[in-house]
Amino acid sequence: MSKYLRGVKPALGRDAEALIKAPPAPAYLAPHAKAEWRRVLPLLVARGVITKADLAGVEAYCAAAGAARQIGEAMTLAGGLPDLRLGGLQIRYMQTARQFAAEYGLTPTSRARMGAGGDGDDDTSPNPLAI
Image (cartoon, rainbow, N blue to C red):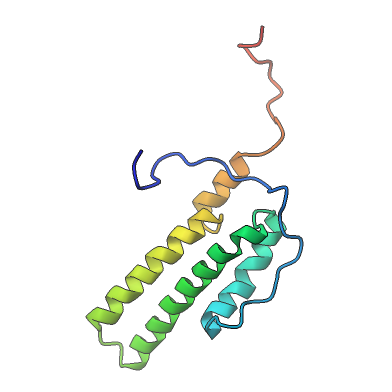
């Protein structure tokens, strides 16, 4: 098995133990991370894909997205000159945030995958393999 999760991923669906109300953002998160929490958590709760056990991953996503945004603002305030150390750090935070976003259905591809794994069978044609 590859250490990278490339290729076809399993379909996401509603979890039986999904949260019904979005909890408040953790106090330790930076302002940009809290803003991301308030933006995405209600969407995830509405889709029924987040459980109490998943909150640590959502916190990590928000922290990474917030840190990437904070670094971007710092580079802009410094005159827009590229700082290779900060730029590399921002890239790593953005990669981490992107990976978490795909995990929780926050990208267009992962949302399509979520919709593709529906519970009902919408195909009304007879099954040619049925005996």
